[in-house]
Length: 135
Image 1 (cartoon, rainbow, N blue to C red):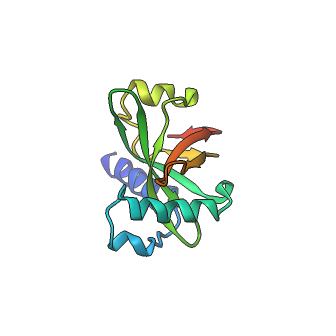
Image 2: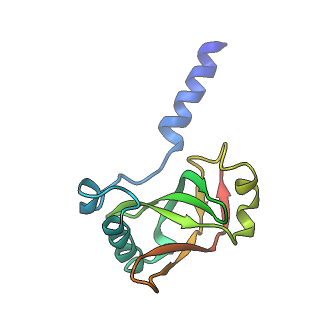
Image 3: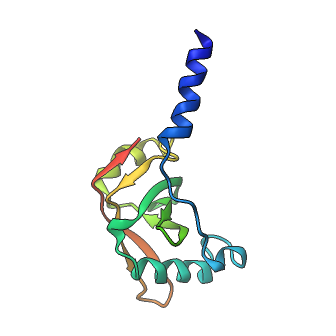
């Protein structure tokens, strides 16, 4: 019986994950995630990509005294990157925020759309819309 259970779990990992192969941005090896140079590179790629073609996954959750954020892995056919997305006003992510991201790491974000705010010369990513979470 245990063998069947293990085979089931292994088959979920092997056949259940259809994520893209990651092609990191060239800046990935030169700059840390969240650094201004890396964030600018992510912003350029996001702005040039139809967001509906991206696969998005929750990498981590973070908050400070006034805002909540998700670190999101963005995957396209030609690039992948991680960005900090402000989700403070995201009602569809209320449960994620309540739990501090616990049990949502790795979950898919179908139909995630973000805006890129560059008003002061730096880049910030803000939640715009989400179809649903794929847990």
